[in-house]
Image: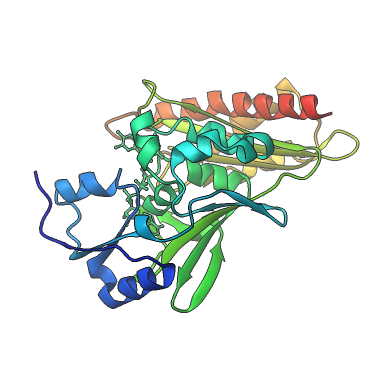
Length: 291
Ligand SMILES: Cc1cc2nc3c(=O)[nH]c(=O)nc-3n(C[C@H](O)[C@H](O)[C@H](O)COP(=O)(O)OP(=O)(O)OC[C@H]3O[C@@H](n4cnc5c(N)ncnc54)[C@H](O)[C@@H]3O)c2cc1C
């Protein structure tokens, strides 16, 4: 199929882009990498009157470190996140998650901010943002906001973004000493959307016990899922295989996935239980390397 007729605008600045988004409201759609939007247009599941193409906006295409944070601006493609020396050195969990998005062709065009704005429940980056306590930087005519993943992701393919708002960057905090993070997922074939994935963050105190743990899952509901009960199991304990197994058991009770054509709820619950110890072991091994 071909898309319904639309007008096309290619602003050169963020201000111009926001003006267009405000002027057209619900009738406008941002075009970033087009990897999710173009299929929706072709199937006529989306029929915006205007496409606001942000690819000609100057700047916003380099990953930068500033005052304890790494910023991934809106024109950064997945492949840049995958290969970024800065991310690989300081936040390897982000690169390893992005590496698992789709195929190289998708990663060459798709943007990291676009993936977050699209809010597919099988997306890697929302879970990683949640586990790392990252923020989504959103601009509109009213100014800039930094939104938590908990407030941003509302349900399947739905975010708190309002007409006139643009995601201009993702903000990841650098990890404090004695902390690490890891991401693992299961997909039926390389390149497929994963059925389930886990992003794990561990922070140890001086004595080697877990001062803070964060576990975010993808593929077990409409939004990334924060496994608070399992986090509580880990808190204050020393990392061990037995502890990670207990956390996995807790997660399998805590999640409430839906069944769909790709997997039953029971299978997704099983995957969560299998992946939790893998992600925690990987994060703990990284801490061992650091220490
Ligand atoms: C075969 C295939 C496999 C894929 N596999 C995966 C996968 O495993 N994991 C995964 O996460 N994704 C996967 N994707 C999706 C891919 O990652 C897309 O790149 C991503 O979902 C959207 O990014 P984009 O830059 O292409 O955005 P677009 O397709 O241009 O836009 C997607 C949506 O987000 C909005 N949007 C985009 N940028 C902004 C912005 N800056 N501010 C506000 N709104 C914005 C658009 O208006 C649109 O509604 C796959 C896609 C395909 C076709």
